[in-house]
Length: 192
Image 1 (spheres, rainbow, N blue to C red):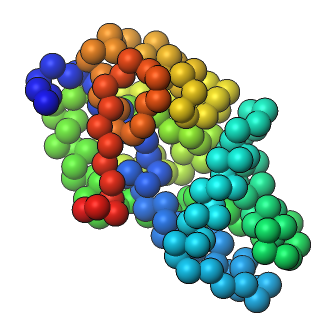
Image 2: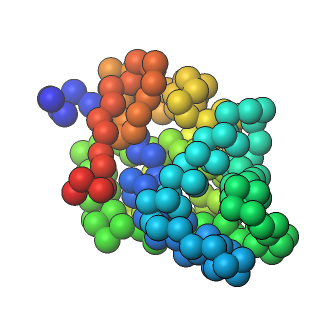
């Protein structure tokens, strides 16, 4: 692929630049443990993925509420009723989720050649706590809250193209883009 044709690279944030697995484990394991429940890493991530996707598929709700729903439904699925403090613990934990060790340096290198944007299923206030961990000034941040939709909805991609002010052929997104015309490259941290 000829990267010289691109002017903008957009990234999803959580799981790509921020270590969301460590964050999820750190927030949910104490909740499960308080109710005598244990899941393997893969079981916990599978449960999280299912419940998050389900919460995002209905009428739009802010991501903070999606995360609260994940905790509530985890309890329902596993046979316990989480406290209000436990329900709030997952969205509150986002501020502590670490960047991957190579994130800031990689973004600085890319920033020397490209405009950089974040396009993520997140709320503005939750992302505000993450932004400093990225180590670069971003050219744009497009959130699910702004688009009132979650990826893979085209609303997020259309808003990104409008905000970035670039033709879709000049954009690169490191995430799945569904039916959009933005070129996509997948990056799996699990595969190295």
